[in-house]
Length: 116
Image (tube, helix red, strand yellow):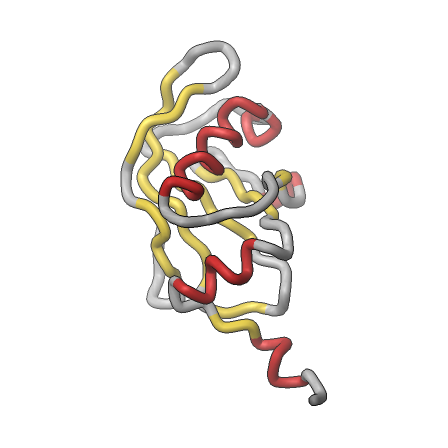
């Protein structure tokens, strides 16, 4: 599910998990603005198994896709388990992801409060 406040970072692609199963990913997206920490939403075409957000092979495939699109930085971790869904994995991007996100149109609302 995408809305007017989403920035799509990647369209559809396939990624495998640690057991070799292939998953069709519809999109990787972020919200267009936020405060520092960026949640990265990975939308799947079909339901996924509970706990798949912890699968390092699958998460690495998502990060590799972002790196192919220009992200240069450390790996991500999964976000709060309560945010995960049947067709969605939410990853928490490291601070270094903000530079890449800004190039895609993301706005850091916290910068409005920075003092020079």
